[in-house]
Length: 154
Image (cartoon, rainbow, N blue to C red; front, top):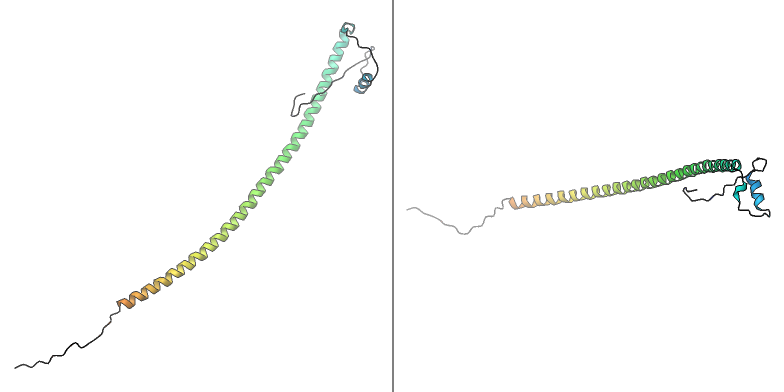
C-alpha cells in the first residue's frame, strides 16, 4: 500500500472444502503447520478461486478503509501540531513586536529630551548673541579734547 509511509500488508483469505470462510487467525495457524507444497492450481475449482478473490478484495477494502481512517487521524494530529506551531510563531512575533515598540518609545522619549536640551542650548546661545549684538550696537560716546581754539574777531 502506497500512502504517506509505504506499508506492505499480506492479505490472507481461505475457506474449507465445505466452503466455510477461515479467519485470519486460523489462516496464520495453518502456516505454522507442516504441509506439502503442491503447485497444481488446477485442483482448485473456479468457484473457490472466485470466493478467495472476493475475500481478498473485502480484506483489501477493509485495510484501505482502516488505513484511510488512520491517515485521517494522523492528518488531524498533524494539522493540530502545525496550528500550535504557527500560533507559537505568531505569538513570538507579537512579543518581539511589543519589545521593539517599547524600545522605540524609549528612544523617542530620549530623542525628545535631547531635542528639548538642544532647543534650550540654542535659545541660550541666541540670547547670548542678542546680548552681544546689543552691546556692540550701543553707542559708545567718548569725549576727548584734542585741542582748543580761541577766536577773536577784529
